[in-house]
Length: 252
Length: 264
Image 1 (spheres, chains in turn yellow, orange):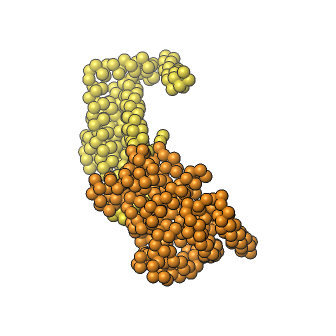
Image 2 (cartoon, rainbow over the protein chains, first blue to last red):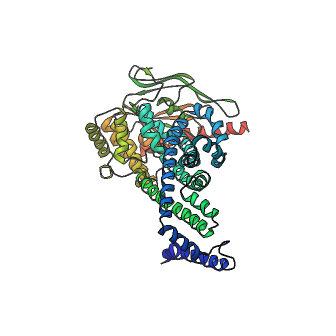
Image 3 (spheres, each protein chain N blue to C red):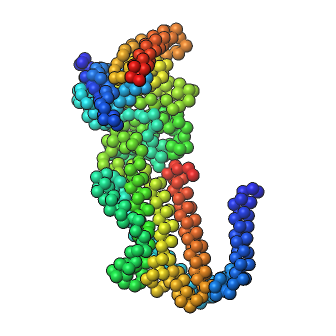
C-alpha cells in the first residue's frame, strides 16, 4: 500500500498539481504568449493527425541512434586502449581536457561548413555530446580494474589477449555502462540543439519552425515530446542496465 | 641450501623508497629453505614483511638483492605452477563458480571437455559441487575462498602461496576451512606457504612456523611443530607449542614497540 502511494500516487499527484497550476497561470495570458496544457494537447493531436509529428520523431530517433552508435563504437575502443596504455593516455590527456569543455554547439558553424545542411551536422553534434562521457568513463573503468584481477590472470599464465578480452573488458564493463548511460542524456539534450541549428526536419526543427509561425502551442508540444521520449529512452536504458547488472553479479 | 629444497631463499632483501624519498628495508637478507610438500606458516606482527616475502616467492615482486629459487630456477615472474590464494579471493564476479575455476585451465588452453572435467573435480574436492552455476556474489565468504582454492587446485600446482586466506572469515568458518585445507594438502601434497597473523592458525596448520620480526623484516625464529595432523587444539602438546610461540611473539612485539618509541 505504502509502495503504491510512494511510487505511483505521490508522483501522479505532483504532476496533476503542476498541470493544474500551469492551466490556471496560463489563463492570465494570451495563448500566443503562454499556452495552457489543453492548447498543447490540441497542438499535439493536430501534429499527430497530419503526420508531421511522427515523421519528425522518426527522423530524430534515427539521427540520435546513428550518432550514439558512432560514439559508442569509437569511444569504447579508444577508451580501452588509452586506459590500458598509460603512456598514450598521458600523451593524449591534455588534448582531451582542452577539447572536452567546448560545447558541442560551438562546433556548429564548422559542422555546417564541413558537412552542409541536413543530417550530418546534427549527427556530428550529438556524436560529440555522447563521445566524451563514454571515452572518459571507459578510460577510468579500465584504470580502476582491481589489481588482484590482473594478479590472478598473470598467475595463471593468461596471455595479453586473454587478460584484455576476458578480464579487463568484463571488469570495466559496469563502469562503461555508466558512461553509456550519461551519454544517452547528454546526446539527447544536444539533439534539439543540433536540429534547431542545421536541419530541416526532426523535433528540434519542428520547434524552430513553430517559432517562425509564432505557434507557441506547437513549441511546447515539441518540448514536451522531447522530454517524454528522453524519459522513455532513459527507462529503456535502466532496464538493460538492470539485466546486465544481474548477469555481472552487481546487485543494485 | 639442501639439495632437495623446493623453495630456497638466498640472501633475499627488499628495499622500498617511501613517499618522502627515504629508503626503507622491508626485508633484510633472508635465508630459508622449504622442502617439497612441506606446509610452512609465516607469522609476525604487521610490518614484518610477511606479505612482501610471499609476493616475492610468488613472483609478483622482485627482490632488491638475493634470489628466490624454486625447483632450481630463479623465480622472477608469476608461474602457473605456483598459485597464490588471496585474502579477498580475486574471483571474477561476471563468471560463475565453474567459470572462475575454468579460468586457469582456459589460460593453459586445456581442451574444453577436459577442462570442465578437471574444474568439476576440483569443485568436488572443496565441496562445492552444488554451487557450480552460482555467481560469487551469491556465496558466503567461506564459499568464495573455496572457489579460489578450487581454481588453484584445478591447474594442479606444485606450490600454493596463501596470503592470509582465512583472515576475513568468521571463527567457525575459519576452523572448518583449516581442516579442509589440511585434508586437501594430505591428499594432493602440494608445498604450501601460508601467511597469517593468527598464531593458533599457524600452529594448527604448519609443520614449521616461521616467526618474523619487523624493522627491518627478518626471521626471528623457526619453530618445528612436531605434532601429527590433524591436530587437536585442546591437547596439552598443542598448548606447549602455543605458549612457546606466544612468548616469542610477545618478545618481538615488545622490541618492535620499543623501537617505535625510540623513533618518536
